[in-house]
Length: 159
Length: 185
Image (tube, rainbow over all chains, first blue to last red; front, top):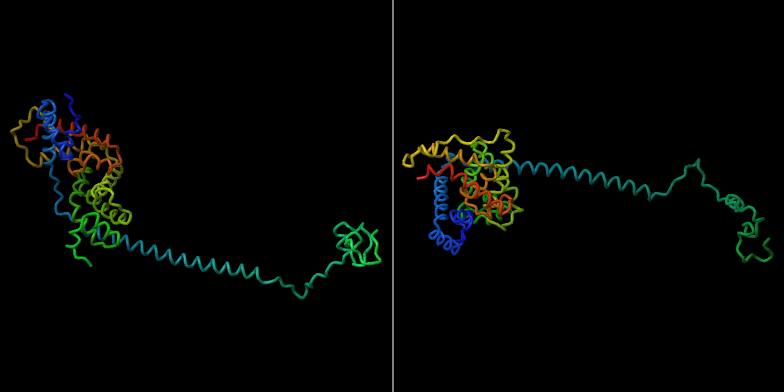
């Protein structure tokens, strides 16, 4: 005879089995002495354990729970308020900083009276600074030969 | 505002939905409905009445905190007792006292079945027998015998596999049966 595992009897005692399975299990108990003995021992154990009466008196947690929740909710609101104020302050600082930095970029550089606008460099000086002074004298354009365009004004020939 | 009677007509999932919307009266209804069993469970697992009350309170505070995340995919009680179990396990780990020693129980052969034990003595015997079980066996047995969770629900509440729960229950009941057989009627 194929006997079910012990867990089936535990589930039977706990009322977990669907109706069909329960019927099948009880039929097996009627025909199998070993399983019937095992189930009887489990049923006694179940019954005995069920008589463990836990007496906790008239404890009522409702008020304690409500107070705890109220307290926690108030704490969250306070944290939220502080956080909001801090966030607003930070936003104001950032905006002010951004405006200040942006304003600095938009205003053109100012030169004081003691700092005259630098004069435009003469072509010769430009050529010298570029290492191109070997290109010779100035053309009619004022640029050293070689730097002037191919179409030179009449009368000037490149060197 | 709904009257308390209106809340008592709602099932647990509906109460959780109301609680998620900020209706705290739904929480008081849930407390009233479940606190007795929660307290008994916490006491059976910890053996400490004061601790059981603290666990009970914290359980329902966590219910309130989690209301907006709660989804009724399983029975409310499975989810509720997951919270209770986590708190009991955390509490037992904080206690550094050694595991309970095997109970000093009367010899099975010397106690006659016809002798009736006083109720307090019988309770003490069962309490000590359950307390003597290894932690996981004790949890599985309390959830099954006293809370009424199925094997599948115990697995969901504890995050243990179904086969682990079944194995624990078989061993727990076998241990308990050896201890309690003689005091049964």
